[in-house]
Image 1: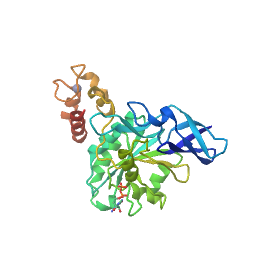
Image 2 (image 1 turned 45 degrees about the vertical axis):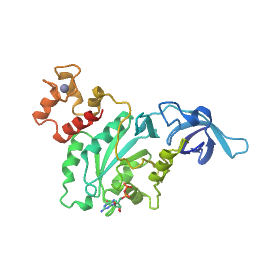
Image 3 (image 1 turned 30 degrees about the vertical axis):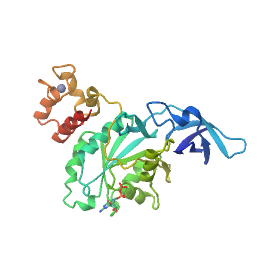
Image 4 (image 1 turned 45 degrees about the horizontal axis):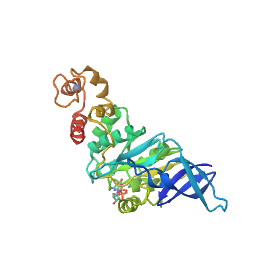
Length: 298
Ligand code: GDP
Ligand code: ZN
């Protein structure tokens, strides 16, 4: 049978198929994963499984190719790819207008990670009730100008929550954001009582030898699936080369072919078309500086 993984814990996973849930075992290769990834089976994966004759516990046979994923590099000396969720339609990048302060650089990193995983970013600026002067509008317009969808929300006044709900309908969405920006609160506007336990899951994963899931796929009404990602302090993409970074900065990428040097990284090189566009005011300084800082980390 074919089904979708809701979560993984140790040697077991929960699968939704044919209108019910099945508990299945992971065996061998699927249990351990291989050297470069700790994520052989993740929330959102489509799998083929055999339901057991006693109807109690099936076995996962095969993971179908992932169409998209939300992943990052693990912390530590030997980084591997940590996949939070697979087959995600969109990634809701949540930042707060205030408390904690709005961080455009987090947005840029999240956009890179999202595009690398073949998923579409949507930017959600939450806690707008805390900023009556609406200074976040500059940031909202910047990203709208780049072609990204930007939602303005408040979990307190519920402003924007209907727009978010409409956007989530019949889709699988990942939520990504630093802790405290209000991810759980805005999800609770949509489904009161929804328990998001990301930090607990993350703690288990760090400790254990088991393949404990980083993420759970929550089912809300109206065909909404939500994958929560752990409260992320630092978002480091996995396997990104310096020369590839420009691909994920949508306004810079088309200029790169006009640089004098073919291997230009658009940092300090002379006759760089990206720097020239920035000097001419055609590339926003926030984005240009964000690119420079990002490059230093690669
Ligand atoms: P998470 O770590 O991203 O899941 O953030 P939480 O949902 O736990 O929210 C962190 C804190 O911010 C809590 O004290 C919330 O009550 C508060 N909060 C969340 N959303 C809003 C909002 O839109 N406006 C205001 N004023 N506070 C909010
Ligand atoms: Zn250049």
